[in-house]
Image 1 (cartoon, rainbow, N blue to C red):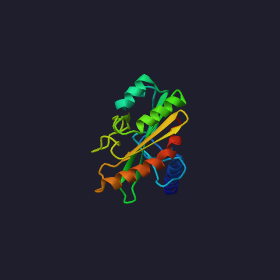
Image 2 (cartoon, rainbow, N blue to C red; image 1 turned 180 degrees about the vertical axis):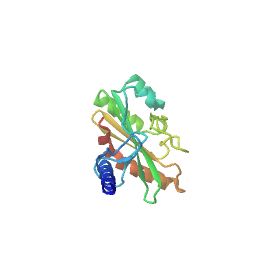
Image 3 (cartoon, one colour; image 1 turned 90 degrees about the horizontal axis):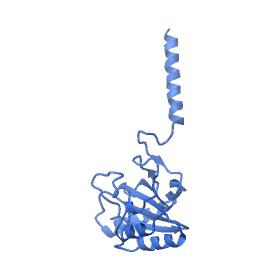
Image 4 (cartoon, rainbow, N blue to C red; image 1 turned 60 degrees about the vertical axis):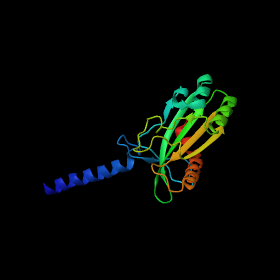
Length: 192
């Protein structure tokens, strides 16, 4: 009888271990996953708060400033957004928003990229600013590092920031921009 009980316990333990090995890496419990993007300078992890890319065909409702006006008059085809985290070399958590705005023409995409790359013209909301993800003491990623790239009809917009900035604001923003530039490779994860 004792041997049967031990045998059942052994089967349960082995079954549990097999389940851990084969279970999906991004479970509903919010377990973060690493990305399938190629390696780069920083190791990014998909946020458990955004397990799947958020997609919307109404880009203007997720923008502000002149960018909102542009997207109202020149509607996009699709907005796809994801949120990732990484850490600075000294261990501070960084939030990185990746937004892909697919326009109807390459000309419209070039105009949008030019507009969003100028200071004071607004932008597409990052997922923190949009309220899709709540991070205590952080209302937007727009105060950190920004990068944008044109890829055919897609404008890829990256913003990165931390809850607390380093004492040297210029050095902080330079590091956030470096992280944002490294995050362009994450756009492939969003499957826009």
